[in-house]
Image 1: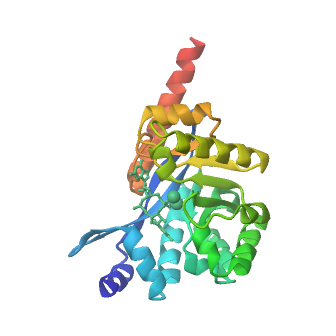
Image 2: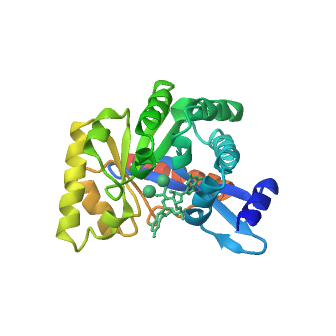
Length: 260
Ligand code: C2E
Ligand code: MG
Ligand code: MG
C-alpha cells in the first residue's frame, strides 16, 4: 500500500473532493470541507481514513498535504468570495513548528486569502505535543485563518484545552448526530456542547446530518451550521462548481418568489 501511495502521489492521482457546509439557521451555503480522494487504477477506492495515517507513519504526509492543500486552495479561489474552504490537518503536522508558515505559503501561491481558509484539527492530534500544536494554531489564527476542532466529543476531550486554544469553531462528531432522534443522552450532550460553545463564542457545525429531522432538531437547539449527505456528498471540483451555481439559482428564485 505504501508503494502504491507513493506512486499515486508522484502520478498526481489523489485529489480533494468538496462537501458543502450550510447554515442551519437561514439555509445559506457557507463553504466546503476538502476530503482527499484516491481511486487507484489497481486497488480501486482507498479510504483517507486508511491512507492518511499511513502517509503520516511513513513520513510522506507533508508532501501529500502540500499537494492537496494547493489543489483545494486553487479550486476555492475560483468560488464566490463569501465561501470558505475547510481543510483537515493531520496530527503529524501539529507537531511541526513550521506548519503554519508552510500553509500560509501554499495558499498564497494558490491565490486564496487566509480569511477564506479554515483548518480542522482533532483533539487526539493535539495530544502528543500540545505546546507546539498550540503555537501552530495561534500562528494560523493570528494570520487570519480560522481553526476548528473536528470530531468533537469523541477523542481525548479536554475542556481546559478548549479554553486555552485560539479556536473559532467546533464540529460535533457524527456519532452524536446519528443518535439524535432516538437517544436522549445524545440530545443532552449536543445541547450541552452548544450551550458551552455559545459561552465561549465558538461557532458549531454538526457533522453527518443525513435526515431532515436531525437538521430540524439541531436548528431548534441553536446549532449554527451543518454538513452531511442531506446537503450533499463530497464531489469533485467541477461538480462542486455546478452545485454552487444551482444552490445560488434556487436561493435567488426563492427570494424572488417571497418578494412577489
Ligand atoms: P472528517 O474530517 O471527520 O470528515 C468527515 C467524514 O465523514 C468524511 O469521510 C465524509 O465523507 C464523511 N461524511 C460526511 N457526511 C456524512 C454523512 O452524512 N454520513 C456519513 N456516513 N458520512 C459522512 P472521509 O472522506 O472518508 O474521510 C475520513 C477522514 O479522513 C476525515 O474525517 C479526516 O479525518 C480524514 N481526511 C480526509 N481527507 C483528508 C485530508 O486531505 N488530510 C487529512 N489530514 N485528513 C483527511
Ligand atoms: Mg474534518
Ligand atoms: Mg469530523
